[in-house]
Image (cartoon, rainbow, N blue to C red; front, side, top):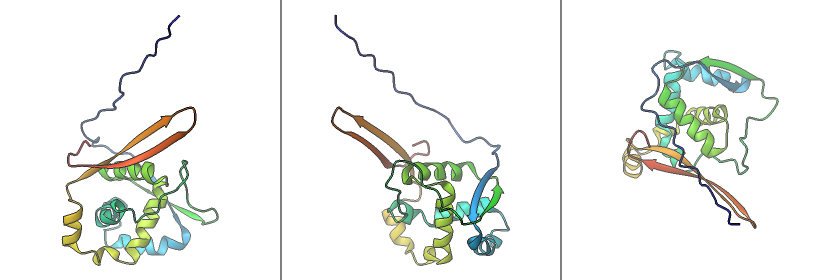
Length: 172
């Protein structure tokens, strides 16, 4: 008796654009960084969603060149315990929140960890030191990226890889 192998068709989750109405989201910022957070957010009229957009745009050059440390384990790494995390609720822009979710998946880090890391980079004002022409030459500003996950399982070994791909179109 011969066995048959059935391969499922490719599954694609399609969407055309982000919904206009966004839901509330939460960031957990360590108490030791709350003063810095409030200082930085004043320049953005106390709107966390605008500050998140600024961080993602200003530090995209560093993000895309691997300057944010990745978690080497498969599971998502969160912030350390005992940091007395303070809750910040806000309504993020859909594009920014989707980018944070892609970064979370790629870096194996929580979105809050990524935000706090970008906040600390911003406290050093590294974005002002990045040469604009170099960043425009290396990474076009119109490029978007997507995360592709490939899993290869065999009898001897398994491989799990996340690949960050850059695309010029918005949908990836």
